[in-house]
Image 1 (tube, rainbow, N blue to C red):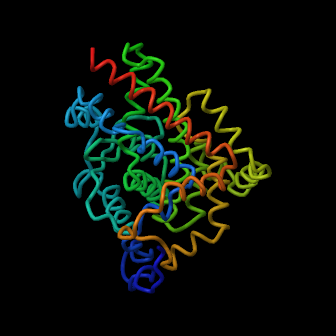
Image 2: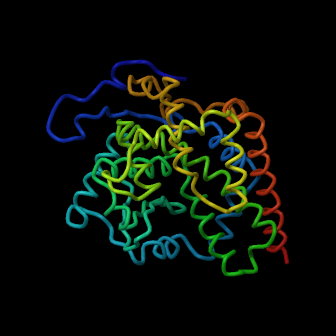
Length: 337
């Protein structure tokens, strides 16, 4: 159910600081920003019997705490004394998206421009220093809201598993047989679509489409503002929107390439379509699903995904579910030996 009412979307009273200029999205459900293809694929994965339990058992060999510390080993946790302005922006983003529990944030010394949400039971966000140095404050606000969106949508466990499987696969670890490789490909397919969801969360956190598109331009090309032109970048994205099936085709090619993130130009195109649908404005008016609302039926998600991505959306859902079952059966057989 979507609730209408001024108390859910009205701006907060005027005051000092940038956070006062943004609408606090009280009690907003992640369903408000989740892309149908992302939500349906993730729901399919979760519906495989005991799949989550198998994952936790499989990666329990690493342990929750050691696994978390491995990601954080070369990182600094933000606070009022460590990366203070980054920490302040993160707090403001969590307030905008009405996060009840502060999500730990870390900065790692790494020149690669990237960020991620990780963890099993206790998710956290990791920013690379290259990203922090490249982006200005509003662009960083978008990235932080994007990662908070991943956490709130429950993506962190599956991203963590995906990263571990990639690392094990690259090292030739015997555990990663064909069944696990099938799950890895399915996870890559799902995760790229999950990026489309979190782009929407990022926009809701910063509430300025131009900032979001400018951030994507900067992260796609890495250039300075005097070297790039946002209008031309948006025109480039428009070319991707000319065919209804182009997104599906590009997803398939990227799946073969083994990439985790979708292509910023296509992400711009997808986000513009969401804005033009009116959904973004409706959310800012307070017309959005709330956490206390019941979850829609799984078939509703599947129908929405099919509407969003033609017949290929159902193929993605089927691939995720089938690969998950194969991996579950393979792992459980190993445990019985």
